Length: 359
Image (cartoon, one colour):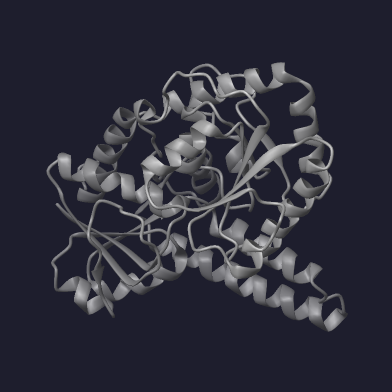
């Protein structure tokens, strides 16, 4: 089968890392894979040279039989390409709409007219999303939680295509160097600048009490305003998996700085390096261990990036209780080993059978 992936803007995030890891796997299974994009905004090597397109007709000319998208905006455009469209979900668009609605409401639309306008706009967008979910039935999801959400919320069965991590490429088995704790703050400040700022505010208060190295990692170049901060000891722009593996191995704690980040490859990579993950407190993150035959101990800690008290409280506990560090690290390592390549390969095989109509 000739399979295309379409992302209007090719950036580096959990979604693109997840689909990027499917390229080589699908080729090994005998499929031809093409990556289409309108704009390249990252230098990260996904192992597949992107094809720049300006419209769906250019994609149709390549004769792809199935086209995979990772967000609702791109998904809607694919009607014009004339092939089966697949929505690969990392998170629920309804949850994103709800977060956007709550944020805008909190930013000052407190008057009756403002609330009415915002509520109406939110209701119309929600209806549009649900309509697309119902009329475009072919989709993949990355977690059992989302599979259950679509079954219960929309009455539709979806294919589960799990994220995966090659633990052997990350876990060295070595001990971390002695010295101050290292906290790795990962996130895209262009996507969620509010939450990156909230995390910085929380870490500044904590750093005054407990010395630690703060390493900031971003998928895009660091903004000049952020680069001036004396709070951060090192800045890095993500360029490769090998670079990230080295950073994870040096870090004691990974802090996800916005609500959509954490679940997926970046968290699995950190867990595979036995780095403790502090993920945003949304349900898909907390349910990430659902498919395990035996539920591990707490595999990550969860915080609301917008709550300035939550993060210092959790990190304070970790710095004072080393046994908590070890327990959560070990459970995270156990979780990462469940999400092995073999399981995803079988998921992809079954998902493609669903598309081809053999199931």
